[in-house]
Length: 108
Image 1: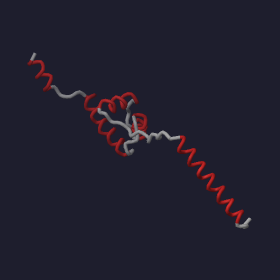
Image 2: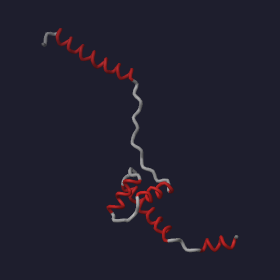
Image 3: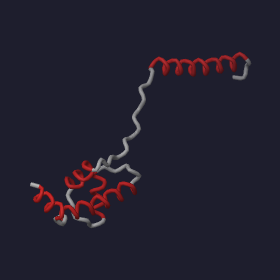
Image 4: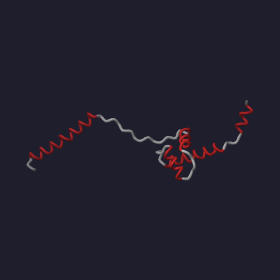
């Protein structure tokens, strides 16, 4: 069994493995250029623009194997409805008080 393993170890890498490594380098380059915002569809579009023949599934597989992830969009924080209603009432009453003070001073 050891003989077979060492024979396999010395065997030259296949054409597909070499292509995958080259595609990985291009994928990392396109991912960095996009500000790490592109996932597999965006990188696939970059490959098409650069006239590099590759399928979307292959790009997705390369990205998944090498743990390349796009940045997530900022998630919305949950809003406290009581706080919002309080701020609205505060603003509303502030406007009402300004109108009342203007009316009392006889400006209107």
